[in-house]
Image (cartoon, rainbow, N blue to C red):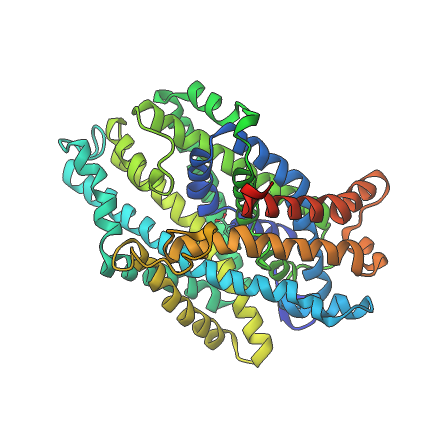
Length: 469
Ligand code: PHE
C-alpha cells in the first residue's frame, strides 16, 4: 500500500502505524532494561521519576518526532531538512536526525546481542521440557548453583554469543528487507497482539504464587533522598530508550504515516502502551524474584540469571519459561526491526540503493560492531574503550555503546528536536501537524519550548557531573 500516492511504501492504516510504533517502543527496554535499571537505581525513586519523564518529556518529544517525519515523508534527516527549509531555517538542523541515525545503528548492534541471549534461553527451556516433562517446575533435580551457571556459561562463550547475535540480526534483516507494508507491518500486526496476550497471561499466573505486595512497595515507594543526579539521568535515558526517542526511530516511522492521522492522540496511545508494558513487566518479574527470596539489584543478570531460577518452583515451570522468553524475543524483534529500518531508509535515500542491498549493508556494519559487544562479556571483558571518561570507567564495549547512546546522544538529539520544533520551525506548519488547539496547545507549547529543553539540559548536567553540583 502506498502513502499519499507519493509512490513511497507506507503503513496501510492508522492502526498498522500504531501497532508498528508500539512494536518499536515495546522491547527489551521494557522487559529487561526497565526492571534491571529500577532494581539497580533504588526502585520507587527511579520509577516515579521515570513516569514523570515519560509524561512531561517523552510525550512532547514523541509528538515532535512523529510530526517531523509525517511532514517530511522521507528518511529522518531528509524530513528534518525539509521542515527546516520550509521554515526558512538552516538545513543543518537535520543534524538532530543524523545523530539519531548514528545512534540507531549503534543500538541495533548491541540490541541483537541481547536478542541472541534470549534465543539461547528459549532453547534452554525447550530442552528442559524434553528432559523433565510437563509436570512440576523447570530444571527438576538440579541445584540452584547449576541453574545460575547457565548465564555465565553463555556470557562467557564468545563463539556462542557472537553466533546468536548474528542469528538474531539475520531474522531482523529478513523483515526489514521485505519492506514497510509487506514486512515490518505484517510482523507487527501479528506479533504485537500475541505479545500482549502472553504478557497478561504470565503476569496473572505469576501473581498467584508471587510476592505481589512486596513488589508494589518496592516499585512505588518514593524515597526522595534516592533521587540523585545519576539516577535521574538513568531514568531519562531509560524513558528515551523505551519510547524509541532520540534515535530518529519515530521520525522514520512517522515518515510512513498518512495526512489523515491524528498525531497527538496517537502519541498518547503509544506512550501509554509502552509505559503500561514496562510497569507490568516490573509487576511480572519482581514477584517471582522476591517469592524465590532473590535480590532485585542484579542488573542485566536479573532476567537471565535470577529469573530462570524462579521458574524452578513454579508449576509448569519449563512451559512458562518457554512462553516468557518467546514473549521477550517477539518484543525484541519488533524493536530491532525499527532500529535497523532507521539507518536503512537513510542509506536508501542517500545513495539510491534499493532496499535489500541497503539493509544488508547496514546489517553487515552492525555485525562487526555487534561482535565487539557480544565479546565484551568474554574475550574482550577487560577491554574498556572509554576508560579515561569517568562516566564510562570500567565499562566494556556493550555498556559503553548503551551508555553513550541512552545517556548522551539520545538526550542531546531530543534537546535539539525540541528546540527545532518549539523555536525554529514555522509555527503554522507545526500547529497544522499536531492538530492541537486551545488549552492543550498552550500546554504542548510550554512543554516543547521550555520544560523539555531546560529539564533535559539540567538532567544531562547533573547526570554527567554529579559532583560539581
Ligand atoms: N524502544 C525499544 C525498547 O524498549 C528500543 C528501541 C530504541 C527501538 C530506539 C527503536 C528505536 O526495547
